[in-house]
Image 1 (cartoon, rainbow, N blue to C red):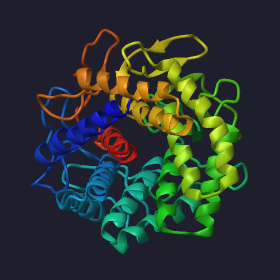
Image 2 (image 1 turned 90 degrees about the vertical axis):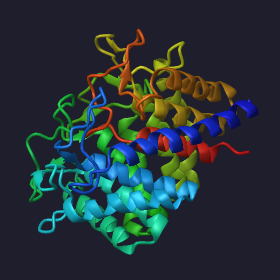
Image 3 (image 1 turned 135 degrees about the vertical axis):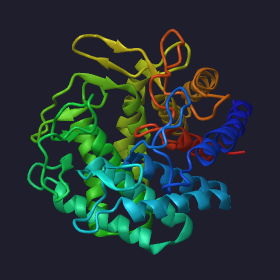
Length: 398
């Protein structure tokens, strides 16, 4: 097992430094408008006039910052700096605070809504850049975004965070993150990424309020979001925390299994960590229901109808590799490590694009590559796969 894991560590470093990051450095830098291009299609056609999403830009900033932090390569710091400068110049709303959802290719705002999910990703990214460079303007901006989320989005009466606001911070009627989402006031996904952002911020800013709210988020997952019968995550809720969804998202299950653990470790409360670790192994096992004999993890299941989305999108594969390895570290059960190894075999055989760089969006149950969705775009970023490489490179010890 040790040899296989060391081999995996080496292969993932190669994947990150010779395939994923070079794709973004060589093919996605926008020398005309600054920053990075907004889209490349699944058929590897660059769309130079595509709009630029906040999530894409925050995730590029996080990925290059994290790569610089872990691998100590100043080249990655330079690309992170490029992303940071573009974000500061174009994405922040100087009048109302917060960040825009989307810009035109030339950098002018085209969708000015304040989606809380997106604000959280900017916190996550700005903190990571600060951790590399000690650029205090980034930490200050991250703290400013934290205060805006707490002021506008936190539900002090019923707990949790509302989803989306106008430019002027008025709660929107249409709260959806994307067209496939339910229009509900509270979602697992937004809470997961606020948790992730607040965890990173707490590493560098020991605020009493932040610590309190990070603890509260962990407890929300334990008490409201993780289904006590199935140990899957419930996905959509009304403001009273009534579940409004029958879907299981296997990728989110396994991503949450390690992010909640990480949050509890960073918070540093031994009793809460003990409580977390009684549950997250069950969440990892619930996610494993989606693992196929190929080593892949399918997207989701509707528990009411029994319908399974058997596509294998890129990001659940990456999160499964980290989540199952985290379960292995905690339990010492090699079956979890085998899931990580099998997942990588599936990914490198089916999802890594060795010819054109980066990863394909998805592979069907019959092995057909999805060329109809982006290679790079609003949602297709170097964050899930890049983070997986960095996490496992750090966790697998020589």
